[in-house]
Image: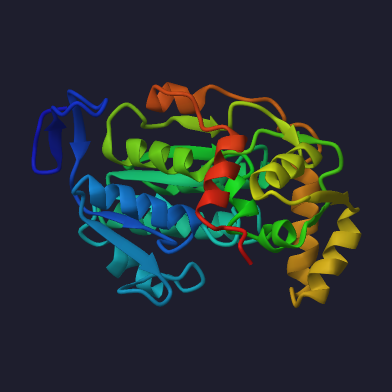
Length: 296
């Protein structure tokens, strides 16, 4: 690829020497979410023009309202596609097809899609985006369970309260640090060689939720106990906290599908893309504790 208005050659000493990076505008959907805001921060640091799309931000973008998609995409070179609430939900494939058609009509050259590892229905949505995106390059990033779900997501209160109630049984999971995911996404958005790739991102080792709870306890300096429950029991618990019955049932079923052991193996895809090992869960836990994540 020759240097043009959309690329620059980075000759610094930061590990990207000689790599040409796209500098055209990038739309980050769900730009204020756990992954989106990290991608926005990294692109901004690289000097790449960014549109952070969200329902209430400066760039209006709502997955439930496609009337604003064209305006958000017009004039962009690439987009990070982080669908809410999950690619496995009913209607996600249709949304991906519609988004792909809009992106193609707007001349977007590159799409990086966040997907779930080991989710059959998410794979259907991935294919829908590929089929509708025209000439746009599509890269799929399938992620293991986020480590930050314990510090920023649904499991935060459980860690603070010292009791993690979750339907994971004894299955092991190679928890992924979102810093690694964001770095891979930015590499795929801005660099060449990722078109058509499917990356399965994991941490360097697999832990059961009981083992993860023990590590969280060591990091916080107070006990954190894992309490396994059935899917239906977890759905009922979510409903008690105000989650709608249909959503609670979907989440419980999704976790049962993902955490049955079939995703326990680690991969080397983080290292393949970034040239370094992924971050370990214990390092995540220590850093989150140091930053005050569980000082509730």
